[in-house]
Length: 100
Image 1 (spheres, rainbow, N blue to C red):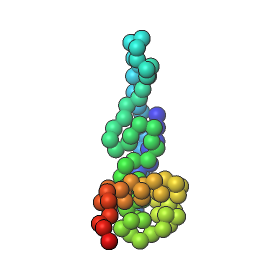
Image 2 (image 1 turned 180 degrees about the vertical axis):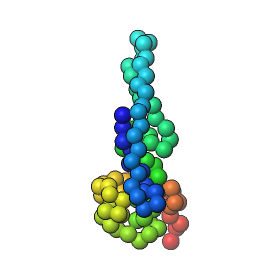
Image 3 (image 1 turned 120 degrees about the vertical axis):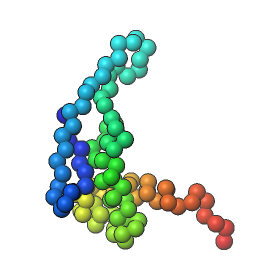
Image 4 (image 1 turned 45 degrees about the vertical axis):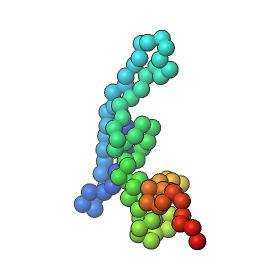
């Protein structure tokens, strides 16, 4: 069982419980002997939903908040928000800046 964290709904915190199935591979050449279910909203080995990460990063980029403020507002650590901001900025900004 895992408890991924998500955004509040209606001002109240959400409490999710996900009972993942564990899959085992009997093939001798398989590098991963076992693995669990994963969905796009909660990637493998993550405890936060992609919605929560995106909202924390967007609060810094679009909302004018600092990383620490966004971390407090979303009840996560500041390194998580810093990584979410970097991901958000990489998707929005061009690969190369225009020449000056």
